[in-house]
Image 1 (cartoon, helix red, strand yellow):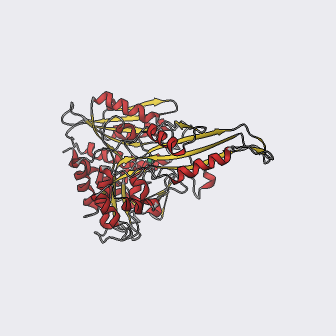
Image 2 (spheres, rainbow, N blue to C red):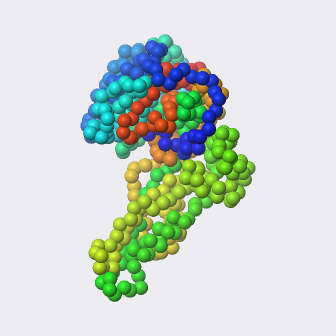
Length: 469
Ligand SMILES: [Zn+2]
């Protein structure tokens, strides 16, 4: 995934006057930008969808390119895992024993059905200043930009302060089993990982005039959780209703969950986000943001923000009924009803705690509540590190002077969670800048504006040269 962030939702709607970038519909001109495009076209042409066994094919192409740029054979390793796998590449630094910096991206993509697309999703086509194709954005853009940057730096003979480990996973969009294995392998081999930079989240938003509007550093993700609620009843003939009805009882439980508001949480990340974005926030919500920064217990301010779908997730855990199923005949009392409640849990709160709260809110001992394990982990926020934010600022301001940089939290999960859960700070620092209207990750006709490639490679280069000088 890439954008899909809570922070971004709030950033639309007004225009900031900033330095004018070049027209937004052009092919890359720098050698590294052109190389990023070549790698991207090659990657999009390989359908790395789950089950097709193509991730090793892409990994082999990436490895060949890295070797060509000066990486040694034993520095680049593909580790197969079933039909997929992950690629690791080690870039040696001056202090070989110091904790490493990991740079991650993913090689797999979400399925795309050619009959639904206007163009073949796995034939990368350039049109109107865009590259079209599945993965052109998520996450083969990040993958290609990072690869081209590392190739450039290696060819130039740059030596970072300490080792960099590139880690490209092979099932981020599905099980994240390669991510889990990759995170463990990096930690085991390196001894200590100081920092993770993820090319698959964060990034820049352009306004309708194609001008940079805001840049987000992703520092946290909400925990995803589904709970299945079930209620059974003896049932019977509908002409002879008794004291209980499973559908009515489950409906009452759903009403209670819908009405319940989890406590307001103002974490360091929320606070930093409000502080850096309040100046550009809509006039109706800016005072509430200021009030919550000053006093996280301000109920009126919390109510104002909670009334808006784009803000509620920033300050609370949310749980909503999403599916319900029950009954078996029009003329029978229902014997069984089940419902799904989907929660987006604030980092730092456990799924068990939320389950407990749901049970208390429902207050019906007949209804069972079961957590549905989908393999995701409980999220924690990365503490905002000043050296990282400073280096991001230097790199972003080089292409967009004065642009506001906000720390943000995603509503969904990325590979970063497998590092954060090991206590390693991870930050989403995608260098792709695009308009929200161009955002089709996971969707039809996914595309990348080509004009973002030159400055994106430069952004990664400056970020690394600043952070690891
Ligand atoms: Zn992704």
